[in-house]
Image (cartoon, rainbow, N blue to C red; front, side, top):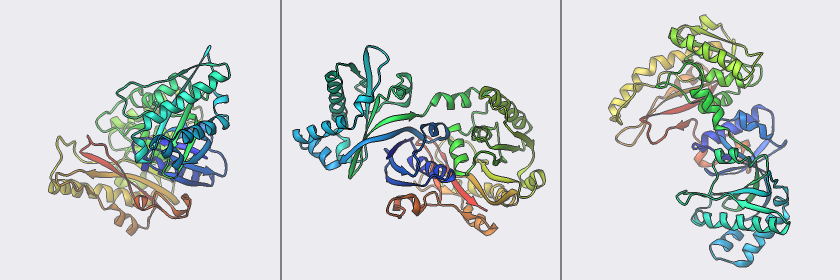
Length: 428
């Protein structure tokens, strides 16, 4: 069993992971999922290096031992000493502690607790202290001095951040223990990979040409590339490429990248950024071009059935200072319809048969509390596209899609955003 700790938008993270594994031909089954973690069994163990290819995964762990969550409840809710002793024995017997390595006289290790079970979330700090003390005691029994990595008192949950794990080299030393409590089963794992935020930051604020107001985050760009099934050798097109963020992630996925933008400055900026990426990441065989053009004449610029996938974020509407009324939000959506409908028509022409379109449309908050969205699915189906649902039955153990994952689109919107993103996937 492997465990995946998602980012803030767990649904988006799970969809990306599932489609990446499917695209790579690795048969898998999601045994359990929650906003805290996913438990996945795969025909071939997912390489730790896949963390660099994912935009929505924070940590990857390999399960060393698992046991009933009922034992955890007895231990920490009922304060059953024998249940605590059993948990301690299971952790020690797994061999997880023996594998922790040291870089100095003292072994440095950490414990992060992820609770999908609400009752136990309240005592997660107690669980973390117990597991840490048990590991420390076992190391002492082996004649090893150790230091248990603690937390600030103000931290809401006892979880090490990816930055802390990176800086303390806990992955290299097999020294972060993940204690993941699901509703029925609890998994104790060792972290084998962690997301490197500094690389995404470099591709965001480190690139030479910036466009802060309308920029898509590299994290989301990588997710879109993966949802589009973009892999080594395929051709990806972004017809609203801006400064080239989606194109950058496509090149890092070893795809060929084509960008189009109506704005001449954007064409020049995207080219500069891709040239920079090629040198920064030593992509000697990077294949890319950026063209100036209008989306309404995309097929004339690119040609018919020339690309394998399209991933793009068109205009999402004006920058809003406050949450709009429902009627104003509807007007924003209606004004954008010709642009999006034109994109759908041209995308169908330039995509190869079986190719995918990943497109972001506005998800507009309103004062009434009911968001306004664009109903582009109907237009896409009318043109001949098939809607790709993010979660398929075969992805899950039990062969049934859970009710809270049945939607056809994915929403990415933070509390501070007036206009969020609705992500759609279509297939020709």
